Image (tube, rainbow, N blue to C red; front, side):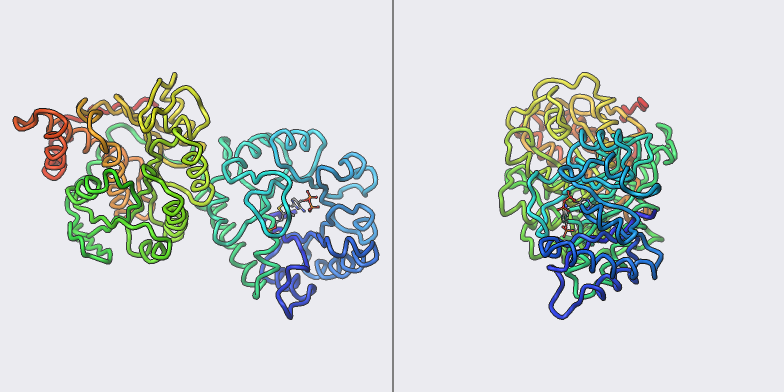
Length: 531
Ligand SMILES: Cc1ncc(COP(=O)(O)OP(=O)(O)O)c(N)n1
Ligand SMILES: Cc1ncsc1CCOP(=O)(O)O
C-alpha cells in the first residue's frame, strides 16, 4: 500500500458549494494514494449514514485503484469490503480487529508517544498514525502536539520493523517540507506518508492541494533526505581548501548596503550578498559592522509583514534570539519559513536558550516550523536544545562541560540534520558524519559581549557565499571557514600594539576581519579532523 498522500475525509470542512463525493474525486485525481473515511457527523447520525458514505467512497476509490480505510468502525469496514481500519488508542484492540477482519486487512493505529509506537509494533499493526504533529482546527486534541522533532524518536522505535508510519495533524503545503526534514530518525527512517484533512478537504481546489502536497512529499523523499552516510566523506585538506575557496569568495563580495538584489557574476566571482538578520539588540551594531567588514550587506528587520520580500532578496538568514520578545518571535517564525521556501540557508544562534522556559519553548517552536542549515551555540545552549543536562546556561554563558563533545556534536547534527557548531575553547563542528575540532582564538573573545553573535554573522555570510557558489552549498566548510576567520582575526587583533584590553580589542577585531587574507588562515589554522 502506498501511504504517501493519505486523505482523511471530514465533510463538515467542505467549502460552500462543494459536495463530498466530488471533493474526494478531485483529491484522487490530484494524487491521493489512500482514503480514510472519518465522518464524525455521520457517525453520530447512526450507522446507516456512515455506511452510505463508506459505500459511495469504496466505489470511487475502486475507480482509481486506491485503498479505502474506515475510521474506528470494523463493522462498516467489513460491510463495504474496505482495505482496512484505522483505530484510536481507546478503540477496539488490534488483535480483536485482526480476528474479525479478513486476512490481509490493513490495521492502523494512532500513536502519540514512543511507548504507544512500541506497543503498536508488538501488536503487529500495519501502520501507525503519528500525531498530532501540530495544533489542528479539525479536532479537539486531548494530548499535546508532538512537534516535528518528536517524530524522529517515534520513527526510531520502528527501526527494523515493517510497520509503516504516517504523520497527521496540522500538516499543510506550507510546513510539509519542514515535517519531512525534521522527522527523519537517527537511522534515516523517514515518514512513509502524510495524513491530511483540512488542507485538502477545506481547499477550494482539492485537486491542486493534493497535487502540491504530493509533489512536495515526493521531492523531499527523493532528494533532500539522502541518507547522511551516502554523502561523500571529506579529508581535512579538502575541507580546508573548500573553506578557503569560500573565504576568498566572501572577500570579493561587494559591501554596498543599499544593494537590493543578488548579482552573481561567475567569471569574476564578484557578487553581492544581502544578508537578512533578525538579531538581538545588544550587539546589533557590532554584528552589522562585522558583516560589512567581511563584505556582506546586513539588513536588520523583524516585522513579519516584510519577511517574504526579504527572503526573496537575501542570500542567507541569521536568527539570533539574544533579546527575544513575543513580537520578534512571530517575525522569526515567518522569516525562517520564507527562507526555507526561498531555499536560502538559515543560521540559528540560540543565545541563552537554556536560561528560560520562554526561550526554550520559542526555539522549539521555531525548529518545529522551519529547518535550520546551521545551529551554532555554546555547550550550555546546545545541551539545553538537545535535552541534556551535562552543561547548563548561566544567563547567556555556559557552565559545565560536555563529557564527550565529539559524540555530542555528531549525534546532535545527525538528529537535527544540519551542521552544528559547538563553540568553546575548542570549537567542534559536525555535519552528522564528519567532526572537526578548531583550536584557534584569543581568550579576549570570551571577555567581550557579542563575540558569539558576531560569529553567527560570519557563519551566515559564509553560508550565503557557499550557497551562491554551488546549488548544494557546502555548509560544513562554510561554517569551518567562518570560525577560522573570526578566531584567527581575534589572535591577530590581540597582538596589535593598540589593544590594551576588551574595549580596544573589539574595533581591532573588526579591522582584522576586514584585512584578513587567505595566507594568514593557511598559516595559522589549527584544524583537526576527529572523525
Ligand atoms: C492516519 C490517522 N492517524 C490518526 C488518526 C486519529 O485517529 P483516532 O485516534 O481514532 O481519532 P479520531 O480520528 O477518531 O478522532 C486518524 N484518524 N488517522
Ligand atoms: C484526526 C486527527 N488526529 C490527530 S490530528 C487529526 C486531525 C488532522 O486534521 P488536519 O489535517 O486538518 O490538521
